[in-house]
Image 1 (cartoon, rainbow, N blue to C red):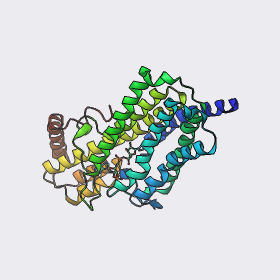
Image 2 (image 1 turned 120 degrees about the vertical axis):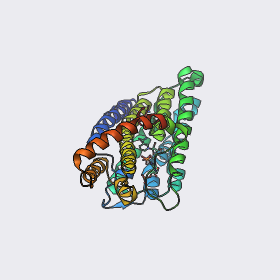
Image 3 (image 1 turned 90 degrees about the horizontal axis):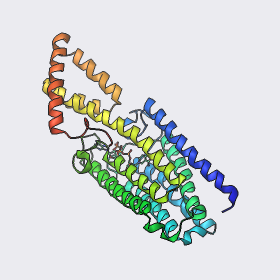
Image 4 (image 1 turned 180 degrees about the vertical axis):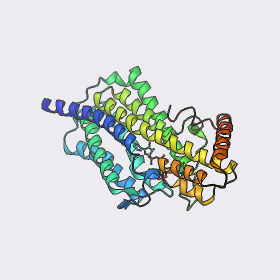
Length: 314
Ligand SMILES: NC(=O)c1ccc[n+]([C@@H]2O[C@H](COP(=O)([O-])OP(=O)(O)OC[C@H]3O[C@@H](n4cnc5c(N)ncnc54)[C@H](OP(=O)(O)O)[C@@H]3O)[C@@H](O)[C@H]2O)c1
């Protein structure tokens, strides 16, 4: 690689860190606009399977193009080859297998799909260009504790991610599109076990590559997925609380439960309040009953549901 390219590749990595922080801040203001947070009337939705396949494909195609286009000198070294294979293996699963396993996924807004596509081009180029042309490792790097621990974390994280996505998919019976509280696997301990696995995976990759580029991708993933995991955490708490409250107050879940499920968190809370205030009971009596039920539920919750109060992510 030309020495002149060292600086741009480092600059791209620092920019990726900045984008991770910025993305996290923006997502805190407005929930990421796909999946359960997509507005019911959102225009230009791309079918979920097509969206995932198209937007993730550059992470596979760009590295292959980068390596085929120029002599990938550094790929003669085993550590570079293994690290690039780790990256490609993940994205082969994500772009060629994951989309075709989705059940009842909601259409992806076009702009979300375009942003994800651009990120995959950017990151695919950054990681593959760095590993194929620039990264210098000695041959014994593969026995270095940083590489070994990083590789194990990457593998464990990927298995957790794939297993947790499998659990999520199987929550729905054919034809269903609603949301349920996931159980089993690491969902017994964290709300968003699939995101937890993905973060562990890329932290492992960052450690094994011991580079600004690998670390930047891990940090970006952490920033984005932590924010979305916190939103899932709140959303599932609201669903669970609303469901229990309605059930215990004898209001039933029925169509309101379905309606609540399909709206964003703040709307769910608003609907819950509106429904409670317009119920046949007086508001004072309702408030007392709510307080009593919430107290009772929090104890039940702690005893029976290991997730949610413990933490959304870690
Ligand atoms: N590296 C990164 O920066 C990054 C960023 C985003 C995602 N990802 C990865 O991409 C994969 C998918 O991400 P995602 O954000 O779509 O995950 P997600 O919100 O957890 O959804 C995954 C799938 O499971 C369904 N699902 C989720 N929660 C459910 C519930 N409680 N009940 C029933 N079905 C449920 C979703 O359906 P709906 O589509 O209908 O909601 C979707 O099809 C994950 O492995 C994630 O780690 C990586």
